[in-house]
Image 1 (cartoon, helix red, strand yellow):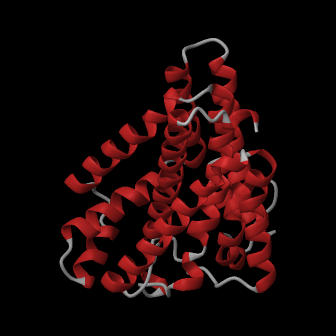
Image 2: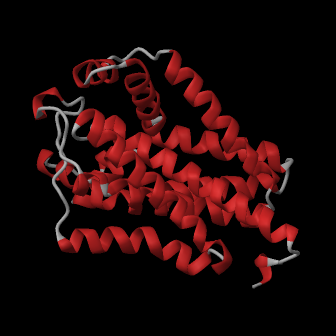
Length: 257
């Protein structure tokens, strides 16, 4: 039931029609966030590969990004915009939390999303099959990294002040193991070994964001979760681009290794 709650919460697909989900289950959705990455990342990679057969790769990549935006309802992008507005415009903990709760987007959110998508579009220069692998692996691994925020930080608001009226429970050992397997298995199966160092970029980004949020908020919010996922994923992609550039300089064909 927790898996169904996670699929319902993190996507806009009608999983809620399958069975009524108890409210308590939504407190346990984060451990299954990387599992939803198998769905969202898989659809994104599938869209990229299929459209890449009939249109230029740069256009296929845009279609793939749009596909995930539609599936998730821009859930994470909304979190990133609120996160940037709050941390950019707030000077105190209380003011930062108030700005993040405001449904209106501000200058920091607009500019931040603009630069986020501009950086994301740089991946259009990679080979199609390799980019499909990165999309799937990056989605799952970055959601694993971001999911650890509930284990490292307390919730920054009171439960009744939450946008969703839900405060996530910390993971049990079994839930952590499931989360790790769902996040790590894709890159073990598909990602070339020479690209594995890029996984550290996501981990380092996560640690930096956790320290930043602890200092400014003494905790996290739902918007922080979405922002952490997107920034961890973006740093993973940047790491892959950097490694690809290095291997090209030294004429290392990592795709055949």
